[in-house]
Amino acid sequence: MEHIVKINFPGGFISAGDLYEILLIAENAGANHIRFGNRQQLYFSILEHCLEDLKMDMLSAEINYEIDNDEHPNIISSYVADTIFNQEGWLREGVYKDILDKFDYQPRLKINIVDNQQTFVPFFSGNINFIASGTNNYWYMYIRFPKTGRQCCFHSLVYSDDIPSIAKTVEEIILANKDLFYDQKKVDEKLFFKILLAKTATAIQPIADQLKLPAFYLPYYEGFNKYNNKYWLGIYRRDELFSIGFLKDICLLCLKKRIGQLYTTPWKSIIIKGIDPEDRYEWGLILSKYHLNIRHAANELNWQIEDLCDEALELKKQLVREFEEADLRTYQLCFAIKTQPKTGLPGSVIIKKNKQGSFDLLHTRDFNPNSKDYVSYLKQIKTADLSACLAALCNDFYDAQSNTLEALTNPISEEPSLKQEKIAFYQCGHCLTRYDKQYGDSVNDIEKEVEFESITDYKCPVCEAPKSEFSLVELNGGQV
Image (cartoon, rainbow, N blue to C red; front, top):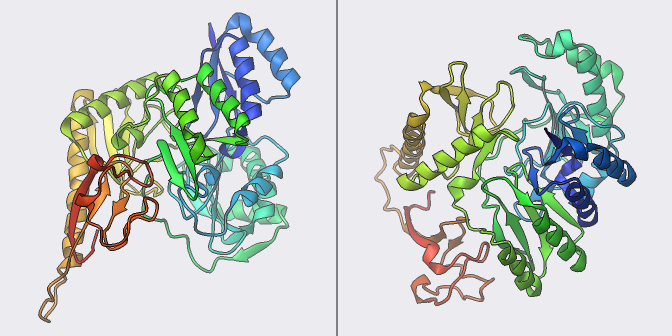
């Protein structure tokens, strides 16, 4: 009999030394592989006869863990995106760590702590969602009542230092009043916030501007990528399995190169930041040692599926293969496969298994996965027909974008239309980085006005894809 061991990484990061110790314990208990979950946690499987030794090792190392249980969901954060996917706003490493350090309990509800400037980590997949506002150290708070479709925003902003205590109070109220706020068709939001205000004495600030969801963009989160004067490395596994030997080597190299921590992502992958350019070859050797590919297609990386769900994983693999054969564009979209009800997985397109064993297809009204306004597209779809239905939905999405673009570039007016300047640039097919000759490329020491065709041995300054992976994009009036 196999048992599933789960270990949380609050905030989605862990020191290389601590991860190495966990890997040794897992290996001693007979595990060969590690999985990461969509809440940035870690899983591995062990056999029954290894349980006692595992418990002793965990106790000795003072590691919190759960076996065959998820009573304490991980606190997820967008700290992984800091400096590599967004550099705007006030939210930085120190703020994340200060907040996480103040949690003196293990939450039983899902908590998200995210920057409103990024779209890599979902906003509303938690039960208690703290989203950075435009005011330094103040946050929006959205409550998604457990096992309901109800979500509401607290009427005031909350202060960074108060997040742990407010989250604890919210959890206590919900769990002490399940008949009112847990798995209920109707929830009295006013009553909930009245109780919350009576139990808290925290620094709050009126909301001046309502939260505006940024347009969704999923960055290419795999491979070697430049930022500032360093590299970051993203590693994704198609089968979700990371060998313990590989991760141990990664941890040892982090320790050797004085890289303090590793990051897990909601896309079940890992990211290592702070790699010096002169060390890139050594990191590449580890990838070669374990024969790891780090150039998967973008339409394989934009999927959310339930943790430890082989059915959803196999369906994802099948659909990705069919997408590849159809050469289907999926940019600005992400897909979620739900085989169980009320999982809370975010997605702009939802593939939901119904009680009959077929699938229903939904999407958010604006195709932003952080939205909760769902539209039913098709119902009772057989597995064999899913790919064709998804392709039709994707085409509808891009047709709608084209109509919007046409309206923007050809506005109805009684005035004579001006001739619009034609804009042309080359764009990386992997990470969508542009080469525009009017700006050149400072990373590759290319001056302005140098034609792309005349450049030899060019590589993308972000993901280092070769020149052959760039394609010409021509637009009228600069509208994307």
